[in-house]
Structures are given as structure tokens and as C-alpha cells.
Image (tube, rainbow, N blue to C red; front, side):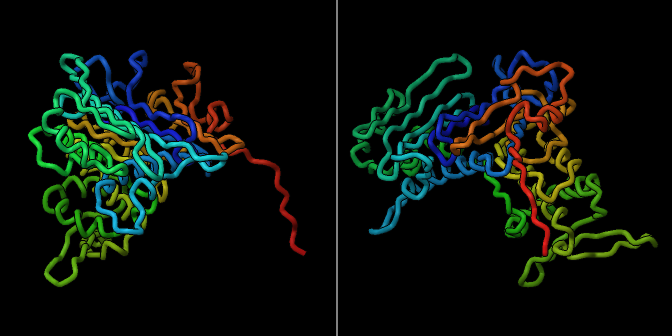
Length: 397
């Protein structure tokens, strides 16, 4: 479960920027939008991030992607002449002289513990790296390791197992990536690694890659078809059933629609609208997240979706039996309403004249009890909207 994600000097986020999923306890609205996990704090199930074109809101999604990719690939053997993971994914703020280090940090709750993990790096080496663990039961904080450019110091919990390997750690390899690959008695490294990598980072154009249907849709049809058909009916696609055929060399999918005489007629899934196909793929992603209590980042969730369908997708994450979370970027302000969201669930990204992106929450502003979130946002009260300058179109001669 995601608590916080911090980036610094990554893409347009030059300054330290924190997406905080911790709920504000003073707010009493929509308590069903929160995850209870046995402490005084509660965590948001959904966060919506708004911003103008080129404001940098998609860069927050990209930052999570780069963070995962460095962790995934930093231990891979690099052939002579090939770029390391930290070199590939070192994307500092560019509109200044000199390049400073970049930094990531994540706080997650896994198996009764709160883990704080992060690292500072540049194109050449890992500068610092750290991992701490706090028991939710006792509130006791433990250092797992702290790393500098020259050395790694392990905490008492893992020191005996890990000290023998620390001289083998390359400068461009993360401690987390390195020890995740080793067979150790402790499961801390694998647990944190798996927790971070379980966050699904979904690209804007994911509906163009139909491989997810080939990979996951047969399993959904076999095990959860009733819920999928109910979902497709609820969003008014006209689909009454869905099947797959793997008898030939190529896997095929068919939907069924009712004609006016009451007969059901098959249609290849890929003849359905892009909105319907995207909805099915989003259902698959949501199902994976909900079944695994995972977090999911989706960039431009509203593309090719009607606002009511967007709300239906969001509502899937308000399952009280799951700890799944949805973080998404959007331009659609239809749901920016106190009827649907708490003030701590709505975020804005805006970019200044020098290219710096800044992330802020609606809860950072003094909001009147009778305020219209959407109206005030479009009026520029919270920022995160395009600054449209006068532009004269010349008539054709």
C-alpha cells in the first residue's frame, strides 16, 4: 500500500515533490474512500491529479516508471559500451546550468510494517541509498541499511548476512536490487522489492497494445466472466456475453449482442469501439490491482472514456475488501466535485515560466464549505490550468 512517493530533480520536478496518500483526519467526508489498516492514520484509495497540457502531471507518472526501471535493471550485467540503468534513467531538470543529483523515495506499508526506501543518484553512481522499517504494532523504527558513495552500513537485523557481500557492490547498482537477487534468510529485500514493483504503471497508449488481452483476458473469462459482463452491461456497451476461442493457432475473442428479434449475434472483440476495448483493459488492470491489494498509476485515464464510465472505473477501487489504490492524471473536471471526492484526494500540477513543475493538493487551499471545486479550478483559484494568451488567426487570402 502506497503512503508517499517523493521525487527531486527528475524531469520538470526540480524541487522536492511529494505525493502523499495519507488522509487528513480532520476531514469527515467520504470515509468509505479511505483504507483502514489498524492505526490512527488512514490511506486514500484514489488520488486524481489535474493539470494543463505540458504542466508536468505526466512527469509524475514517468518518475514512478523511472524509479521502478532503475530498481529492476541496476543489477543487470552491462556489456562494454552499454549504458547503465542509472545513466538511462537519469533525467534531471534541464533548464539550469549544471546537473545536480536526482532523488526518489517511497513509503509503503507491507505485511504489518512501514518501509521507507530511497536513493540519490546521477549518471555515474548511486550517491546515497537508505531503507528503514517501522513496526505498525510497536511503532519501533529500525535501520535496515544506509549507504554513501564509499560504504554501506547495515542494521543489526541483517548485518550478519549482508556484511560479507558489501565489498562486491558496484557503484552503479542499488543495494536493494543486489540483495534481492541473493538467497538470504531475511525476506526484507525481496518484500520491499516486490512491493515497489507491484505498482502497475499504465501508459497513456496502453489500449493500443492488445497483448494484455491475449495474456489476461482468457483467465478473466474463465474465472470472473460474470463480473466482467456485469461491468460491460453497466457501462452500456450492449455486450451480453464474451468468449474466447483457442482451438486454432491464434487466440480469438468474441462479444455477443442481441438483435431486435431476440437472437444473440457474435462480433469480433476488435470490431468493438476503442472506448469499449479500453474499458475491458482497464477492468483487467483494476482486477489485477484489487485482487493483489496493489497500487496502479494511470496517465490520462479519461482518454476515450465518457465521464460516467470514468466514475465507474474509479468506483471499482472503493472495494472495502481490498487495499488497492488508483492514482491517475486527467484533464476531465466532471468528477471534480465534493459529491465524489474528498479535498485530500484532488491534486494539481502547474508549471511556472521557468519550467518548474509544482504539485499541490486541494487541501493546501482554504476552501469554502459551499465552494464548487470544478468552478473554482477552472477560474484559476487552485492553479493547474493553461494560461491562454490572445492569439489572432489570420484569414486566408
